[in-house]
Length: 500
Image (tube, rainbow, N blue to C red; front, side):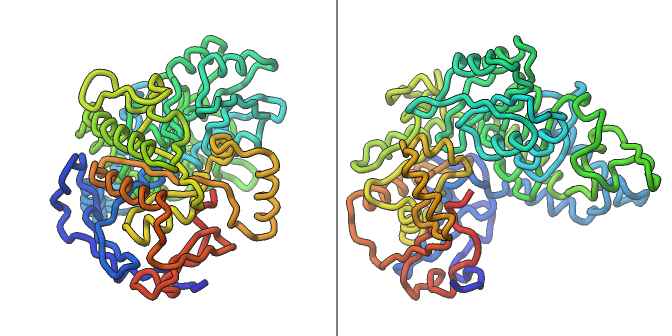
């Protein structure tokens, strides 16, 4: 495989940020890169259809503009008396304040620890809760790896199983909470990154708190789409999923949880006094943020939160309800396509535009996310062809939620054992997976319709215009062509899309 990065010579972003929206349901926000044309294997360029918002979102133009405005004042945070340092510190602390307000926790005794992303936030919390191997953390098989793996380092995990549609009930969680020994924590997602299903967080928090058990909510998928819940004791979420792709995330929780003990990271900025054999840690949240912080990421994070709230949650939810209805119904109507999870569930939005009750689990709410497979076509090939032939960006693989996806796919122990054997031998071609399409503020009904048309072609068995080969190291498929942007020299080195 060539070691050079893919050529971007064929990609042509629109120079102006104020691009004209395509016909149909218009985007809700102006995003950097909207209107970009990308090369396809037939030698033509097509508008890029970004249906991978559940992974990372483009920046709002207002976020990019705020970053450019701030950069002349970029300087050390909490480190200097110079004017620029004071200005950078003020911007950083203003971002912290905005994070707390966005969570509905301004003016209280909670703190916001600014970190890289949700994964770092949950690892940070797992360390700081002073758990021991005999302590139990209740979590679910629906979780992203970020809300599964950190707890195993410090405690014993007790799992809540899902049903065949990939959901669980409050009663299922209560049963796990009531087992002995009493859990020290309930760790649950606010929204599945695989199916878009939204667990009943308020009811789960009530049940846990009645038993004196604190709750941490992985809100990475929830935060860009819905107001954050008030019930969880701890919230973790990321800027890169809510239109601020500059590397900042947040861990929000009670000040008392961080007031004693050693912080997750040790170093400058986290201390009041250090001698060669003694350290006096400073107060939270600074106690938790050793090293020079990502002030640009924090500024971008705050600007994105402002942008979401200026749009308004009702508009966001109505926009996505329309897209969810079109996406899930449309995929489910294509012969040979199976939508995983509570199909049709998230279309329900109550009264208002976009309302519909469709599918066998219409009582269950979900985001505008659909994970699906195409009969007889490898998930990596579906994703590769959507990109190379139609300019549509989706995700494939297990979406950093392997236990959940294996259940949704209905794979048994023998299937998993064979995939494990091959992965251990360095061959990733048989890693199980599916394809995920996910919408955001910049998505339109035209984007969804383009996906549906393309998937219908793939499901029909129509022959590809060029051959595709699968790389055993990554598991990804690549077109065999000399077309610009897709030639062998344009293949990037690095990990495959299906890893996670």
